[in-house]
Length: 87
Image 1: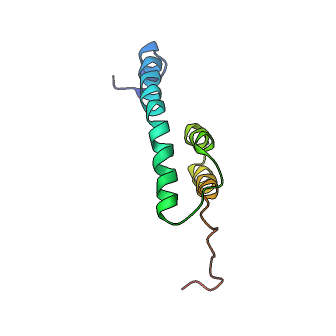
Image 2 (image 1 turned 180 degrees about the horizontal axis):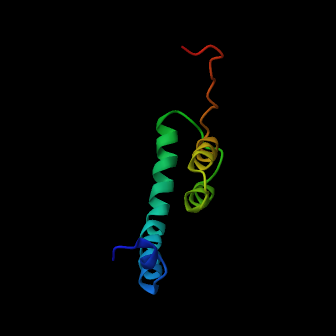
């Protein structure tokens, strides 16, 4: 198909997206556990429990930066300090 917009409007596209989302969703519990272990290995105590981390990983935020910030907060990472004078 030369015109991608035609593919986006097909049932086959919807099926492909559904399969991919199911694959990604199946990995969420292990990914959340890994994130908590990562924070623990860094010496941090996560504020949230695994279900909250899973919820964040399943979020469909438009801006991944906001999602990443929320994940770091939940994992207990301190907020970054930005220098007022940058080179």
